[in-house]
Length: 111
Length: 112
Image (tube, rainbow over all chains, first blue to last red; front, side, top):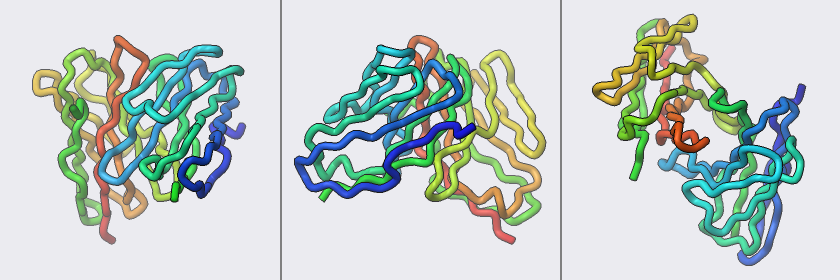
């Protein structure tokens, strides 16, 4: 049981480049979330999904897009990376109103 | 506007003593609260939770107290151990959505 996995673990991008972060879970959870963590800001919700084929915006969605084509995967895309998107990104999954299980994080630097 | 607040960014406690971490919230509709622990370079891990119909929940050395009238919850760790040194986040669920709202975290350091 791998739980929640994230790919890649680290990435450095130049301003304007694009990339996709992959989150996968093997717990059959309906809900999946993408957060970013910045110093002094806690965990801020970017986008979330309550089921396959559904997505919704969180607190800080601008500059990001997501897709949930399969129940076990939740992709976070940056179409044109900006230095303000330098952060640590965490994916999480859960049953409805249950505890969230987090992945190990992706550390992204945008130069 | 921060709906879940952890006003103490850091806390130091001697090993064996009690650690008390505090969390305040503004939305009276929040009905489920959770505490997570996070070590450096790892994702947060779930610690303990409490429903708004309760005022206390215990799990081993960890106890969470909820005061709905004050919109305040606290996490007590007794006795504190060096391995408890981590960042602790409180979170609340908004029943109107499927979101979990997190506080900014408190860094606990347990001194041996």
